[in-house]
Amino acid sequence: MNAETPMIGRTEAQPAWAPPPFCRSSWSSEAARALWEPRLNAVRDLIEDMGMLTSGEGCTLVVRANSLRRLTALAAGWGVSCQSQGPAPETPHAVAAGRHGRLIVRIGNGGPPAPMAACEADPLVDPLWMLAQAEPEARRFDEGRGLGVAGHWASNPMLAAIGISIGQHWPSGFDCPAATARGQALLDAAAAHGREEAANWLREILSWPVSWTALHGIAEIKTPVFRAIRTTPWTAARHTIERQGSAMPEGAARGLGFPFAAARMARRRETA
Image (cartoon, rainbow, N blue to C red; front, side, top):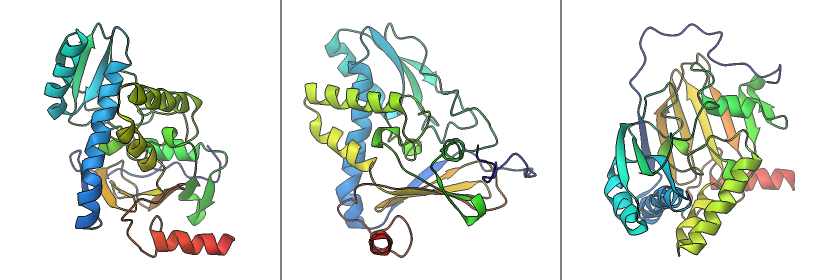
């Protein structure tokens, strides 16, 4: 951790009450929702399906409850069993990791789910902030309470809370070699199974600019077409992560702040 970057949560008095875990999303417009909501759902299906189809003799996945029937049929076609092992544990950062309200599903001879020790390292600090503050090249602003980061699309965990990330693992950083390799393996598997379209959407979505802002136990994650609100450890001051992107989505909203289109165009003009 850089000495100029505050470790949020650790030095602050925690309130006696905290909201129950939740994650909700909303769209910038009905047009954006009509275009991108089906694509997000197809990407979530792809991530779960490829986790099964690339697992060899079997695996254990953390999936959405409504995916069980689809995965059972897919496993039957593969000639293996698919059994629910009950709900995923409600760990301190289950929401941030996209495991809140999910099921553990065992495919064939699968072992335990992929560990999330890096994500759960400190229950009082959001795992996205822990990841960003460890980035040596992070751009610091707002007296260290803001961090600007960049990296490979497959190492992007900013949308994990809504089920959009590479596989079942938490990356070691925003440019994680293991995550990059997992991303390429997923693209290769998708191509082998005729799922290139959804794989391309996954790569595009994880290449968008996205921001995370936390204050008083609530985090807001903003993309150019939707935002998500979720629980996070309580902080007395606002903390922000801005992940630079390499692509803007069709139907992106225009606005004055990051990550919206007008703000990014103005920033490009300033740096040209």
